Length: 376
Image (cartoon, rainbow, N blue to C red; front, top):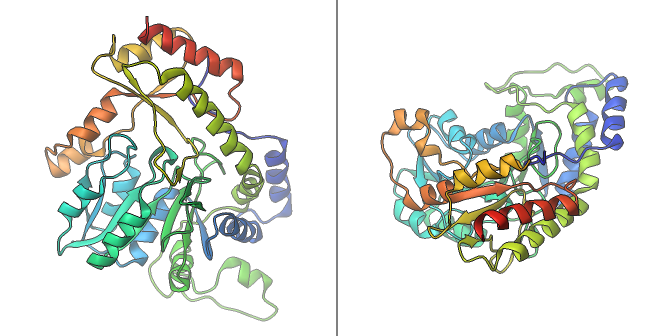
């Protein structure tokens, strides 16, 4: 059976976790600090703050840019529900925008039409690792005096106009879930260009505590903490950070391998008229966190039929990226919302296996199986 995804973990990560456990410091401590510094340097960001997940990263990012109950935040529906859930955690309202058919990323013209006096921020998603048009959204946010937050959960190692995702805006949020490009088991990171945001993020992630555990431990004089505001327990552990440090060292190789597999798929499927392969707009470099193949109306079978047939051949796939507005919880909250482009992409796309450990033989097996079903 060929799985849809598999994290690339070796003895390096196992020994790093082993050493962290035996150090006696297993919660947020010196390894978290090192991981933050290395991650910030890797993405050319002035500051990086580690947290427990990308969901908690998004929650804190929205809070530090002033989102409050009653505000509206524009985001794509075509994203995992964590994107819009983070908005609800702030008491704000997600306003769902359409996406572009070619990139699966949020459509700026639709976003422009949705902004109003209640719009506090735009939350863009670099879907499946493909960078959104950051410059265009940054310009729109400047014109409207609203905040821009990047959901870069899938985009570690991706680049926009030659620079790493995480280096362009005030707030970008990353995920280290096992389905992502590098993993810490779970965990997240927020990069920011603003020192006041960094200070606030560090405060909020640890119960609003004025002095961190690490600072107290390293102090040479008596220090007592104060809880200066209501915060959260959104800390990363030193065990996770130790794994993340080793993963970060392999990031370039991991992205290169992913891109080679995606290029192989593109070459294999580009000549099949009923299929549409991903495209990288000029200035965008995707890490191909996922590979999405779109089945046109002319396809000889439905997306679900293709998934079922591939499964009988030992190939695991997933449906296209979900649309949050059609999930039960959101239908109950907001009623019927129509986003035909997002819905079509979600319903007619299939995610193929893609991970660094996928062998050339397995890649060839996947491509041959898909071609047999759709080109016969």
